[in-house]
Length: 153
Image 1 (cartoon, rainbow, N blue to C red):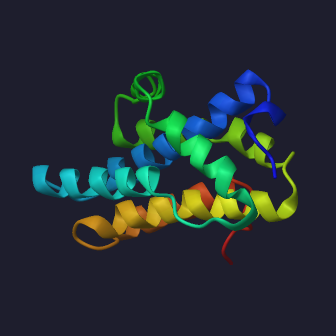
Image 2 (image 1 turned 120 degrees about the vertical axis):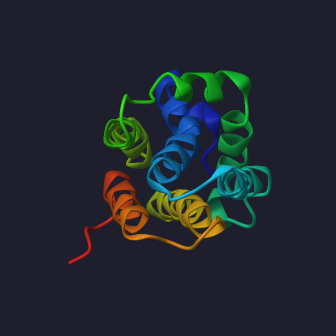
């Protein structure tokens, strides 16, 4: 099982901030009011606080989750908000590239588990309020591809 020590500081930062960028990208395109925003944030927070059984990547995901909840990670993510919705989404998804590279160094089974967890966060955020709209679906597809998953045909 892989742990934090396997990665460089930059790789670890990219992995531990990935859940926040995933959340930011989906929330940015959601159709919501204040209550829906709270529901979306709570959905992400639940999967960060309790990532669940993630097979061979469970310890790694728990460590990523712990670091993602830190003040520093949340602060770093806030710096990447764009001036428009599209700019915010593009920047958040671009920030996933270093995480994808770090995932590429993992054993395949662990990489699949981590990618699946990140995509589950995206789905939970999109489902949290008023259901998944077309823009959220498109952003989730972009996230999947950005994390190394195959593109939908």
